[in-house]
Length: 300
Image (tube, rainbow, N blue to C red):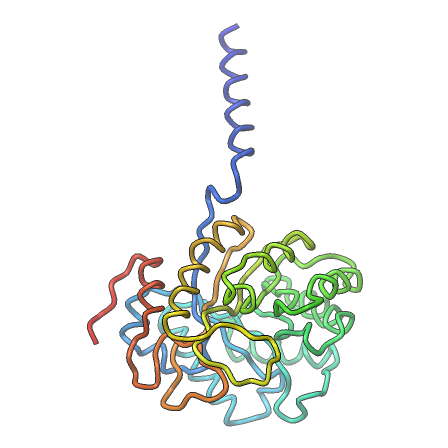
């Protein structure tokens, strides 16, 4: 009887572990989305011990020497620091509205991987639910996934925009299967301090979620009709919300967070959600990120 009792206790304990809420082991890996290679040399960035970074890449970047030089510098910075890069394809520099064929996009990824063998993580397209049909993006994703089985290819990077869930479901139908990983830019929900839109997407589709671009907005003048709170103190509170309540609510399915972005540079244009302002001074949101990372920032 005693062996049977012990076995029953083991089984009961295992089932109890399965029944634990998904938040029990939820701790996402946090990285930075940034286009500027200068980030990698910043002592404040280095102090955070960031392991993942993300950049948008023009799908036809290989045919533009200036853009390719910028990508060379960015990839070199990530490689030297031992940081894993995620590259998201975006509209081309020649014709911004042109949709490449699946063959063209596969060649773009193949050429990038030849130049940067360390590149193994890609996202099919940036914020495709704004202006791309899901059937087109699904064909791109299937082609990219097939061409590089050893790569992680996100189905798409979605923006938490009206109609996002219906768009994602159409993507799955067109692809014939759901992707293992979705990218999500949940600026709207996060800057309203609401998990609703993110959790609604997670309920609508299966798969893991990477918040491939998110953060607290300090200023924006991009023509959007959606109104959102902004400001330096607001951005700090949003950062805390993302790294606290949002990750707790999302649980294990939210594996990564890429906060956008590191630095504004000397001139702020139509968008500002940076940790470092145009005066090269750290903003309060950086303290929230450092606290999550368990790191101490160097004095400025």
